[in-house]
Image (cartoon, rainbow, N blue to C red; front, top):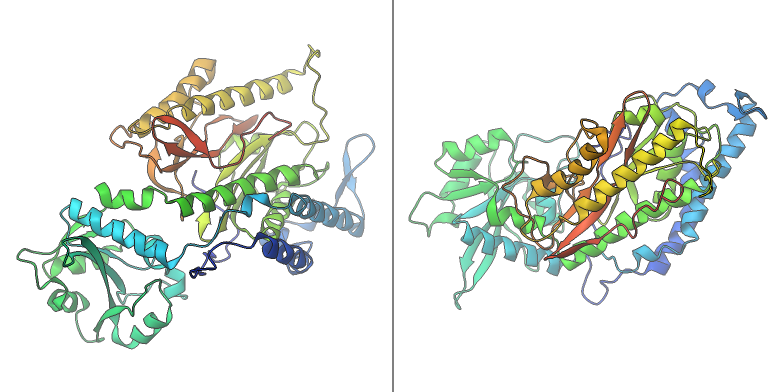
Length: 507
């Protein structure tokens, strides 16, 4: 799902690169560091941190339940103390698990980056393309460990800084990757100081401010061995004026696709372990925070506490959607976050965090812990509770059926259709208003995309996806379950979120 977060801090992607002999993460060191940072994190965020970001009036925050179940104003310091206890409870619960989900995750190494560029070179040969050209962004981050903010902290600028990966044949006839950077002359030393993941000094084609950078690239010796017009592949992050500039001097510019696109879509073992760690950890943070909920909390306050818990465990949240009842009938919310938690509230939390530059994206829908679960023998339920339970089960079954479609060479459309058929067949046609899911990696949203019209894309072993069916009943409530699945040949996929939800009282 697309996420529209009101938290605008810069994306914090991991810059660390492991070195040989020290590539495994010391989870005990991280755990100790996390405990040490808890107090500092709360002090830095403060009681009104999240609410101030949302411009929430303080009158919304000073509510405590009366004995009759209504909410009445109370003194600010009393509510402040209880809220701080809630925040600390969420952190303590998560850290007390021992953070086992972090054990097998470690930063991407120089060798990993070299292997990615090698696979890219082989894919370029397969697609009959002479070079892959990218500017700082997610794809540049994937191959060269530099994001757009890490290159241009102020804004994307007009001077092209391009990474050009070319395949060539070595003396044995094997395909190898050659990487060169087109860089403004005055920025060349800064490019070298970025510490990009190469075992040798980087190659730079410099251009002066009064030169045409695209002509400079064309006239370099990079393509001197070609007997045809150089064919360059670019991805969706390449800005239009750069694509037009390359084409204007005679390059044949083509869009991303085929084997080249699959290089990033198919995850390595290292990537899988990071995705498993950050997604399992994010689910665990929601579960442990849920245990601390009490009546009167707002959506904003819950989001703030969840974010602090994630940070305490070494993850960095980048979006957090918390929606109660009818607010969740709009999949991505849009309300101001001040709705108050009550016993029968259906809580939908869709949240993502980063670890070593990789994304989590999970969703759970549940009742608060202070709403007692009805016994199996209880035959009479209030109609609105019975409907919530019914819808929760339908969405879970829809997700289950989608999971069986995550197999090698099944179409992206088939996964969506399997879930949609369950929801439509249960009488809720038209309430599942978005696609089933999307690829996930260094971006929360990556190709391939799982929608009922995508019949051309075939799933491949190693691709990681979200499965996130939902039912949204306007003015009532919304339910969505979201987990991460890894395609494993003709077998059922591997779950990368630890475990699926069990029920509305056990998310």
